[in-house]
Picture 1: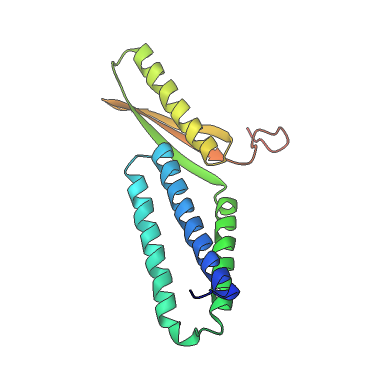
Picture 2: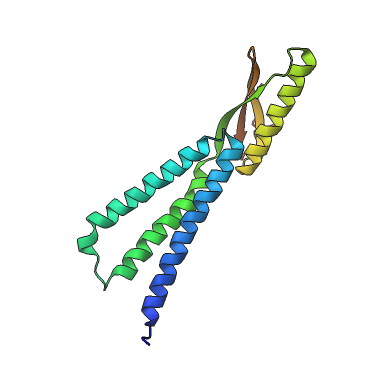
Length: 167
């Protein structure tokens, strides 16, 4: 029976953790997008993740002559650090989101429109909170022949402070 060296175990554990974290982030983004926006946007997220994985594969392919068994751990470490910084910076950069929620109208009475608006508002607020953006403001409402569209701006900053609010 062959013994596996400690460096090999550490390298394989690093590759496992890196692959596991990429997959977990991809699943989380897919779930959030399917709740926040339309369901088919989740497939767009998967497509973008696959494009990113292809980009990473191209980097490895073209940098392959610079990577050898002596520096593969350092290369993996640099790539993992860059990935961690991108994951940490992504929520920081997404501070304001404008979203539109469309809810189908059951009837065109005033009560039907109010109920559809309430449902659209609840869906939008739930999506904003899922993205970590607790402050929302209504940007507009449109009543279409078959639906109600609510436009909402969600942010992580409180714009209702009296000293910063302009009338």
